[in-house]
Length: 312
Image 1: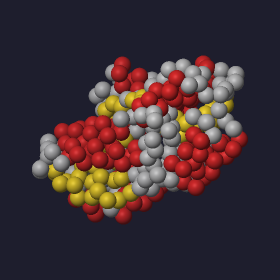
Image 2 (image 1 turned 30 degrees about the vertical axis):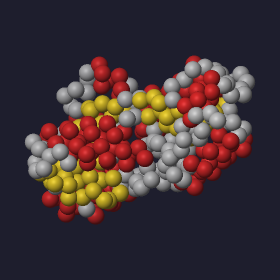
Image 3 (image 1 turned 60 degrees about the vertical axis):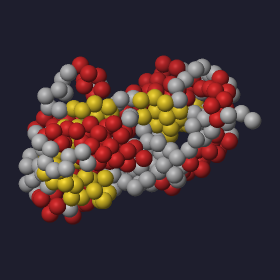
Image 4 (image 1 turned 90 degrees about the vertical axis):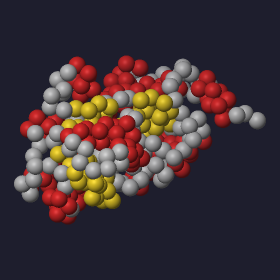
């Protein structure tokens, strides 16, 4: 009987069936946020370099699990050569991904984890170290608050592994500061900036009481920002967000947000497609690719390291 490590080694060395001009389906969590547009740019850049076709298709909103499941099933049925997937739900997508693997269609998971088995359900995981991203946010917020005060954590969505890891990393750091009290940590922003704004407005009494705020992704950060502006609290709370869309960077420059944890979504899309194509062509590939994250402030955003991540 083969051990799991031996099975993985055999998988990495065995080329999948392919022909010239492979078709790679890239399925994001959604298609409206700036984050996904940058992922798409990276995926298409890799496709152009490697001479493959990328089919980019995802749910419109980041809470449509049924649509994302249907897309995976559709691509499996249509016989694409490989799938690069950012699972909306770490559990709900496991069955469709396993069905792809059963059809010998390699799947690369990117952006957000899947509760599956590496080497059996999917071949590689390409993503930000999301726990580290949350830790960066916690460290910066604690520093800005001088280690004391009340904090609101606005979560993103249940079932989203990437943001759950950020939230856990953030809370792990904050626990090290006995004089910081987390007064909200059980509310979810939902899939859009609009839903996040509504949830934030419903929390406004707690937000007034708070000294610091952390939001775990682009839409929750933007929604919280809109609520702070609507209530005249903008600039009066120490606010650390996640992701670095042009809108959020503009807010950073105005002083409405004090820091952002930035991912490298373009690299995520690029490495996801590269990994899938290497697997198809029987080339060696990495099974775990950390695409990096950095803390962006008004002071450091023009440094070479930060500019590289922001694509400037």
